[in-house]
Image (cartoon, rainbow, N blue to C red):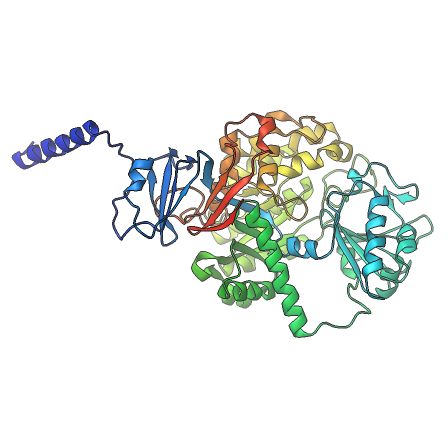
Length: 576
């Protein structure tokens, strides 16, 4: 040791001893007050940061929308100035902002403009709601609703086909107003006779590719339109075409309602699973006008290589919008028996579900996306759909000399897998973008649809996927489910149904695994892990504060936690 080195060592040691004697706690994320005082200080909280350097803390300081320090109350107090906003969290739980990993943003707003049927318990209840809407509607006005699910009804309608009602009952309460009611999954819809008439759908109308018009024994449409058949319904037919001003006002209202809903649930970023560039333009206008509070990461449906390249956006409006992924739909949903299976449904031996997009088309779209610098996100629920998508991904990686772990392509849902395909997620570096709440919501009809063997082998197998090395993310698929992340977190750590049954509990996540699935894993799945997902110095100040610590309270108390604050970019956008 040289004389200079020895002197430096002794000075450093002395300074450390002085700090210890003074009771100063040194942490790796505590910054000196450079650049002026903090804009915002959160103190007296229980912070779980998910940052390995400083996993827990009492306080946080933010400046210009980014975290500048995390540590004890005493350490962070040094960054306060005359203009600093200081919030006493009173011991409440603070975490990285919830990131919704797969939802339909405009769908949330649209659902609020129509009949909300998510919590209906019977076909009779739905008929009553439609009748009430008809009383208020203009002559010929379309009655629109979403959220019903026949498996959640207390009883099966007396007149039915495959458990679905017949449109005659809907005709009685709405003979002159066309009605379209979208299934909770978004993969089917139910219409009345007037809607069939305006859409020119008859017993002679053929099934479209990837869809089915459900018919009765006489060949007449029942009103149930499965998968792509819903596109045959000409919603709005017979009504005056809205003016551009009316259309713009409605679109702005949809974004406003969705934004208000998600920030109230503690969500700071939202991954939108499939919109067009027209919606991107609407979002940009809302951001420019200061009307958006939640950050959006959007998947695009369709597009040429040129339109994709020109529309690619990273961090627009101070990190409020990113467009760098495409969405493709390989199959339907299990509830409507549209999920594409390797073997027939256990409760419908003549069906293996529906392939909603031809495999060759998916392969072509994936190549186009890769060349345009986009991630590929393909909806796949059934085991056949998942296998086909993994095959497409593997072929694309080999053909282009790419590492799947670098591309971070995703399978949206990945709900029902064949055992042979589970290891492939980790091997290929494919992200399983899943929804915890779907597991417990769907559980009552998983075994009837698939049988016990297939259900145990591959239904919502989070632990099996994680052990393969795959990244598993979390979300709600809203408005298929309520966008509430606390309910989905509860489902993820308990796998407990509404009746209290546990659905293959060996696959549940630990509290921290589930928290990571809703924060840093979702950030990673969007190439945003350097900006969000943990509470770390330098990252965006996106924080969710809850009234209870969901990582430690008993299971039955998790769902009683409320959102106290939603903070985006260092600004409080929601307060209880």
